[in-house]
Image (cartoon, rainbow, N blue to C red; front, side, top):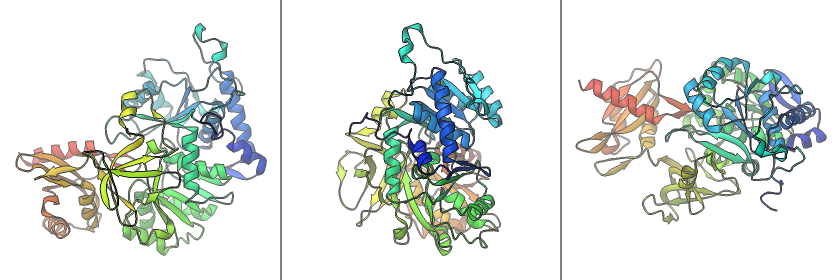
Length: 522
């Protein structure tokens, strides 16, 4: 089986399901069902439109849209035609969006009406002209603007649907969150998506009788590769949510008899704290996948009490994203762990200083390899080369491995700071702070200190209705942490800067901490 023979392409998935179960519902979008037969017809029509408009294999099709069945149809039309879907975030400012449009260099941009103003403002700042069309018109025959090519390209450059799409052809281009710097465009091939979904299926088994609630935005890799694509591969139904609302999520689980979902701990917490949660049977929800951050033990027990099996996971866009998981039947024994590798995934720990691989119980940088790794960063050879270590993908995350082989993410390598010669993991300190009932959210950053080299500064958000005394909070930390790990300063804020998908924007948090520290010293 060669890497270019098309055995792992996604273009036939919907056609296969339409043939096997044409009336089965593929998507429920804002209460409107779309079955596999109709979805297949729409995919083929749109793929033909894109071909007739002159788009060729490898062209990027950018989108600005909320989760929708239209977007799903476009994804599979791109898969069918050998094009690359570039889902852009509607949460960005127009300047940030303009940078991503310019970098991805799309041959077409499809914009949902709700985000038309943002799209126009962003495109006005892009030097190159990008043809744009509303989602509602994209599937109409002859509606797409013609793709222009230099004379030297010749007619043989134009896309023909009969030309096979290779396994290693790019399919999805996702901009990373940028927690470690400027966002980069990670390119995922057909093979990447095929293997990461095969790996997921070996732990989270889905069949055509399953119903998935999809709440992650489709500009994140998790909006595709953590359950939705696997569901469509298996012929299941996906209930799409455009924005997360805990009460509506609980209602949808009951209304559609949802069997599985994926969300971040913050979203599960919002569901658990909602007034409808106690009365929710959740009897159909047999499994819930946790991503973005470890699930706190009390929250995990809350869902277990409702009969929901939780699968804790870890991943990163560059790995497809699925890397580690704690299977549902092991969740009780390994609370807070990231897990063991999914099938078809290998991991290793390396000494950050020497690069030497560490065996047994150890702590080091997490390395990953397998057939589901990404193809590289678009038009950034330097960054693409820098992430690899002798065939291993370097995650930049520090992980510890116990005697059973389970891994626990300690922190980002670049987040660790050195105070008095001792390494301090902000994630460890944050975990202790979050154990206090008065702390709703926390981030710890290292700041320069003349005496200690660096010191920890904590930004905290109060939990509503609970008073917190700073002296009591310090005592709480000292009872659980070595003295050098206890934050030297604490600042209370209304909210923490976010980088998307439940992640804290640490660079922005460091700037806030510096500003507050300077103010308090005046």
